[in-house]
Image 1 (spheres, rainbow, N blue to C red):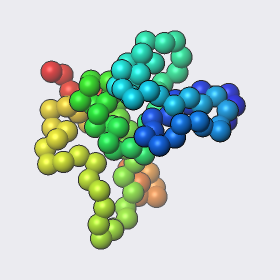
Image 2 (image 1 turned 90 degrees about the horizontal axis):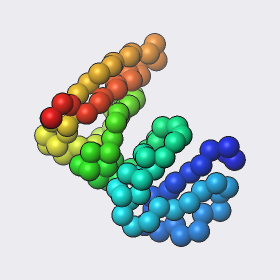
Image 3 (image 1 turned 90 degrees about the vertical axis):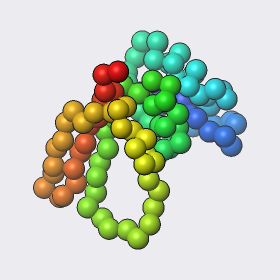
Amino acid sequence: MGWIDFDVASTTLESPEWQNTMVLEADVSEAVSRLKQEDGKDITLNGSTTLLRSLLSAGLVDGLRLFLHPVAVGSGHRLFGSGEALGVLKLSECHPYDSGVVSLTYHPAER
């Protein structure tokens, strides 16, 4: 993992032990906005619906790729509340795989 820089948003982690890793300051939206201005590769977010919602509302998400797995579960967390993403995202690509997994790519809708 040494060749990738990691910027971690965390409310509990203070001193990461991983190489090339820094914890973002309290205003994560502002930090991500600064990161987007820097040269380099794409910024990827994994696993935080709370952070995703925050970055979406700040207009900092250029694209969203979701992988839909055909698994039935009895309960879970919704990615978006009722109608929350309507008008914000537009489906731009849909790709089914032989396994049944579907890749859904969204981009911000025109405002």
